[in-house]
Length: 214
Picture 1 (cartoon, rainbow, N blue to C red):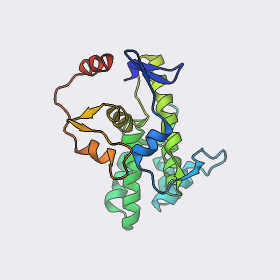
Picture 2: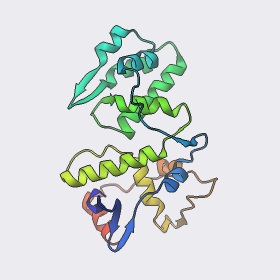
Picture 3: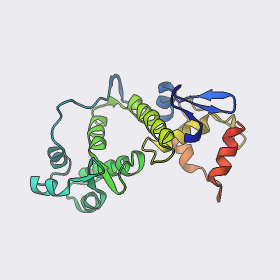
């Protein structure tokens, strides 16, 4: 999809049709319930150190946290292998669940450094528990990632790729002969996405051809 992205106008151009994800669409797709929409996530200018954040998240010692912090291509992060040990063995079951959720955000939703979770994801994850509206942030990161990959002609897309896939599917007129009711309250787009069986052996060129003919 990066090939069809126009960074100047912040939209996709498929054939003669311009389309772009909106905040309203992402809210509907994510089924956000408890978010305080007037409180949008922004990174605190003077937040606590990454080491202190790790200590608070994991209940481990300062020495342990200091040992985990790495620098990969100018990105401050910590390895999934260390987090995995805590997910499997931490004595507090609630901590296990929270750390596993953090791993999903860091490795799957915003995978900036392979097999590592970066400091920005930890900060973002902490704010989610406070009911902060995360939709504009995810959308902004999607735009930023698309534009960065388009300009370089390569690179890792680190926005929420799964949500972008659900968004483009929601604009198909029909999916398996069933209209896509994305704005109905009883319809859960992400659950429907997870239940889909994707066609096997479909190449990138196939999708490019499909988008060109939308």
